[in-house]
Length: 174
Image 1 (cartoon, helix red, strand yellow):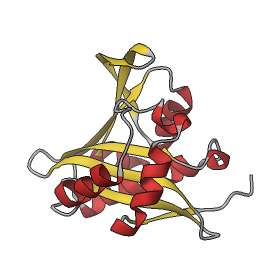
Image 2 (cartoon, rainbow, N blue to C red; image 1 turned 30 degrees about the horizontal axis):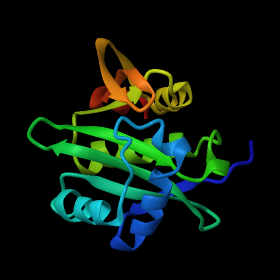
Image 3 (cartoon, rainbow, N blue to C red; image 1 turned 180 degrees about the horizontal axis):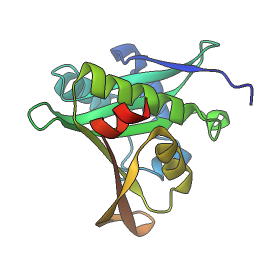
């Protein structure tokens, strides 16, 4: 597979229209626990209240050819506990299933463990999102057994799975 490599760059206010557009696409929204429509005002508040003070580290996923295809982030960063929640989305349909999300996850784990000095990074995903689960496993995340919750979404009640990776596991895999 002769695929492009991805790199991530910090999000800026200039990315707002792109983020809102991506997150409001049905194929993106249906895989999120938070499915309400995104707005420019809401995203601007997110940048000001979450990203700027360092509660969230968010990046844009870029390809070698200069195109931008999605976003990756660590949210609810708890420096005292050494934890954060991971999230990613690919907003360009033609970029799905090509390994870009896995590459972005690996870079974000490096950032979380090396730069932020976290001890554990976890994520939540809708149980039927098998493509995402496989990508997360390739990046090193493992399912947390016996930890589940349910959410009520437009599609009805959906089960949520938890996955995580600890610093020691990440270090031994490098």
